[in-house]
Image (cartoon, rainbow over all chains, first blue to last red):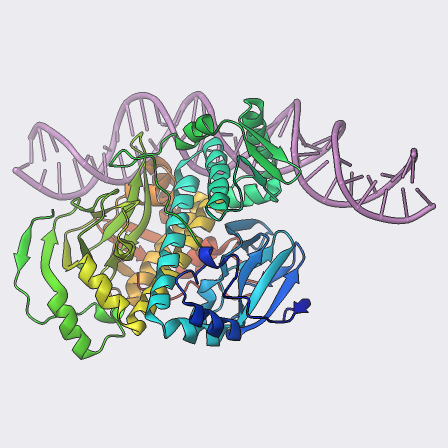
Length: 256
Length: 256
DNA sequence: CGCTAACTTGATCGACGTCAATCGTGGTGG
DNA sequence: CCACCACGATTGACGTCGATCAAGTTAGCG
């Protein structure tokens, strides 16, 4: 189904660098060994390769070891809505464990390294372990929370706010995974991706980023994003943010 | 925290009318008895009463026995984004079981009957039973899928499409729960709710519904919705819908 | 009957989309 | 090493969907 370079399978799950940030965080080292046995292969895909296709019921599910990917759906007229971006440690996709046809596709954004597991076996492995089964719920709850925020963005915020929040969100996710330490980090998205994620056009994304750049808030290009003035960016992003308790709008720590 | 009329607690979980449509669907009758023991009270709230408030970490979680509610978030300027509508059988909210502060509020849309459970006890009950813990994941996966569809609506569809899909979606959800049999059903939403859910204004919702009504596709008012021409409505809703496999855009059967 | 909340309708405005031309840059082959 | 190409970003002119502002009009309901 998906063919590409394949490598042998040492017991690497136990020391997997993304495990602390993955669905498998609460696993014992004994379970890690079992998990490693379930792993069928690891593979590398180039940017733009499809990982899952809408309508399929995948036989294999993947864990993202390295690189970026995204979930999206195409419309008949060719327009695209990106539903979420996937970073190292993410599971692609939990939804597939339900053994139902996927309602979205997944594509590699950069070159990507994946660990492949058989869907059915993996489902049984997780289902049979209450703490892992529950953890799946936890991850999904966080994912839902992130979708809620995106809905608020799309429903009630203008382009400037959406983009400011988006840049901050990506930075935060990378930091939480230890993939960024300062205010400059890898940012392999083209403006087309931002547009398709935020319900805008590339033209408008370009103009809006030009404003942010003009104000000296960010630098964006050549695969790198730098946030020069986090405070002012947060202020723009937070316009209209509100909590009954007056807090600063806590996005929960994520995994998926 | 929430005070209102309270009633005694016979063992009603076992024969609960909404159980087949709820998170508890796969429960044994023995477990139903335990569940009934966990139930602290049932209560009735009038329309517009708050059930959960953003920022709280609820001590009690609720199951919706009767009536409609909705999840939403307020912005500082008073604007509102409705995240989802909750129908009988829905759990309010799974998210609370994670013992984190809620990032949204929940309000009764109609008069509502709820069953209350202690958050902690309920969490332990579910966590300890693999099939139930897993079922929580299943429900959350479906909920995420619904959120995905809403994101596509908001990001890439115009007002007419959004409203057509919304009306169809509500009808389908009601049917699946046996709360509607023909093409006329209870519809307690005001246009303001539709607007706040779909990222529009009441004015524009009014105009758009006027079009649908003018074409003889729907009747909407007095708390009732009738779909007169499901085919044409679906056609409008489906503009731009697409599946790689060419199917008709399968929203998964829901619970939450 | 009269008050109020919800809906409707019209006129105007603005954010974002569309169309199209141009620029920049990195890769590639000669 | 340079000419060329292709793809992405940028910029300008203009169009449109939906927001905003402001009157009405219904429809419950005391």
